[in-house]
Amino acid sequence: MTADLFDVTVAAGDGWLGEIPAGGRLRIVDLHGNQAVDTLLYDARDTANRYSAVDTIRAQGAAYLTSGSVLRSVRLDPLATIVDDTCGRHDTLGGACAKESNVVRYGEHTRHQHACRATFLRYAVAAGLDKRDLTHNINFFMNVPLTESGGLTFEDGVSAPGKHVELRAERDILVLVSNCPQLNNPCNGYDPTPVRLLGWSS
Image 1: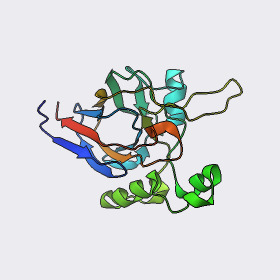
Image 2: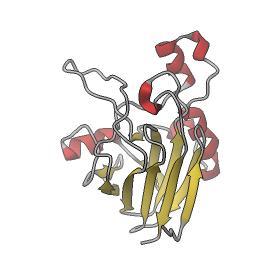
Image 3: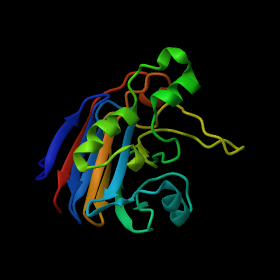
């Protein structure tokens, strides 16, 4: 498979920042299965116009993301569309893990474990972003079922080795990825693994 923009492998716990031109494609491949890929999207020409889980869910009338889902910004602009999905369902409710939330959920002993927000921040600075720009994110391949009472649970993943999701950029977009290092819930099968990112210009 040849990608004319990039073809990178992102190690477990590492991140990636890149731009996809309008009409271009980004494919995220879950190489080993059961790996959550936390992702933020921005309008590359105006990063304040960033992905909104609330507006995306409202517009599509469904809580999960899959083929056909239009990923909308805080101004309701389409940023990208999921055009191919061999996994079938992706989360945009569970948020990104942080050192603070790890402590609340799993105990004081997790305080110094690496987390997605730290990865986001490390890569965001290259685009002139800071922690105020880290808002709603997508958790590709992550399984976060909604309970009957409206709560969320973190469950074993629904992906498998080689499954992928592919986005088409609807405008020039900036993509910020954290390949989740979470060890305390089953979103990564308790064993974080690498993922592959491929980009095409059209």
